[in-house]
Image 1 (cartoon, rainbow over the protein chains, first blue to last red):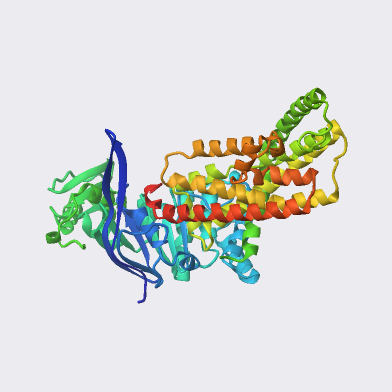
Image 2: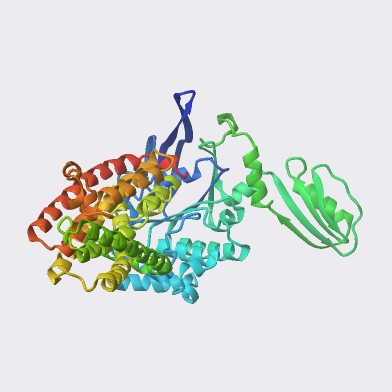
Length: 327
Length: 265
């Protein structure tokens, strides 16, 4: 499949200067230490990493806003920082903490302006606007000043505004920051639909595991400016932590059982929630023990929450080449 | 560069957005009332004390109408430097750079749109006040027309200076001090309080090399004393000023956008 985004040893070094005893001291900070990566067209990729890992800097280099210190990158065949204005018509971006909507005007006015900026003809603009209004459920507040919208409504309008010119690649930098649970779910659903139905390539950064789990298929973990893990979201959750959550409901209270590698997370009458460390005990052994302890009415084996996986990766030192981690 | 209609639409959107600030604009207009009344009293005394009918070529009525227009211009200046300063320092410029549009031209048309709303109200209030205080304007349609021809470049020249100052935020922690200096210089040296004609000859000559008089004095002078040659000279000076300051601002911008990384992550 054709690569929508290609990075080849992309690097960014910031130079911080400060005065110390009448002397100017320059400090170099390595924000992105050399990322190599291909993202096929239509893929939804999440970039995960703690604050300062280099996620936003990478997105800003790929949108042409920040100039890299080294390496190469192409987005839809263009070098972003050299062809920024030409590329702008083919990409969209939402920065969760920055707004492109006019605060005192209704979203419709911003859409009108963006249509002119992107040179959309009236028919194409109206078709896209109506489709986005329908998909993002903007109809109720399309003509209400942005200052009177809830944060959830505003973010839906922000994402819709970034899709108006039908970009081939959409960059989402912490799009759900500050949103409540319902608004987050709504936003994830429409973004996921747009990615799957329209084939828009997605590059998403977020600290919210739900965003990554529900929107992305592939996850990159960045630590200190390097990709320390590049895997599918499902595999990341399944393999990386090496644990499972087991929920069991018995017909009657079960007999107590003890097995190394099992932690009882919750016990209420005939229901149990167990954390199983599969590196210590095989899941089959646990199942056998559970079935022996009482008549089982229902049983479910779940992957651990992605939050847990991410927290584990963050606190783990970056793997070395010997660990077999991707560079 | 994008089609001019795109930037016209940016200006129109900015003007519509700024209508939400009518309360603030009205408050400035109230301030204008107080200012004009005080100046009228000062100039009345000055004219009476000197016994002259004209000072610097201006009658008392012309002087008040001149002041009404200079104040309308100066009080209509939008907060260009703080907006650009914020964009540069916080990284907010990223949102603008994502679009196929020139950031400086985008900011110019936003400023022009806002200034149009402010200036229209200030000029209206100034005209009503001046009429009430010294009678109908001693002017002709020719003066109004020349004034309106000179105003867009005056605003553009003022914007270009503010753009250069605001973009310094890529290097400086805060540009508000520089912006304050520029605004005060415009007020004192631009002929806001006193027509340049009344300045000492040496200072007048020095001011010929600075842009301040072309922002305020030039258009207001044309309003009360229309003169074709003066208009042509003013337009040439304004265009030269815009080109010179524009080159400086463009160089600052080109160097500044390469430093975006250090501002706002």
